[in-house]
Image (cartoon, rainbow, N blue to C red; front, side, top):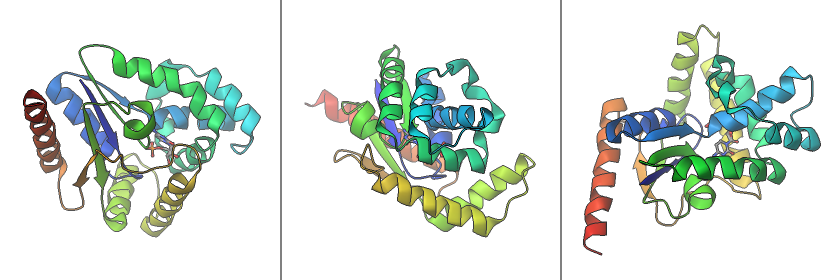
Length: 212
Ligand code: C5P
């Protein structure tokens, strides 16, 4: 089974994906870290994230072993990831890795922006997570502070809105809900309640499949 979770920045899809995968004993891939890793490779090399040729080259040379690096989570890397991810050549270079990850048994949960629309259009379950931008900024600020990052909530909000805007309006694989996605509004749900809502969607899809 493949579960695709998409949604805007800091909507809670990463935490949800991880918890949902643990619940079903599936593997989990936070695809945002892939674009973040490309961005970090460029920044570490002193290159501009807007340099398309270098971004595409970095995407081809990506080492999945580095996806767990804590520095990938910073705001600056998230912003740069949103720049490199708009390049078609970068997305193309990362497609096979994501599809292979999704296809391996016993099942997988992938979260990102284009999982239900481009990476796994035939996913068994598609969930599109939304949340009020103010709530998202609050959560992201608390998260960053817990890592010891000194961040201002208003700056985090502006950053999230800018990133959403760029991700929604890019010509390649823009952020949008697939036609067959279930929208899950996470604004007023804590982690546990969000997980329960997602499990209810998955279970309903399983029942619907049995009656097909
Ligand atoms: O989800 P996260 O904030 O880690 O993603 C960082 C950036 O990577 C996003 O703003 C988006 O531009 C890009 N991304 C993407 N497609 C995905 C996942 C992330 O374009 N499937």
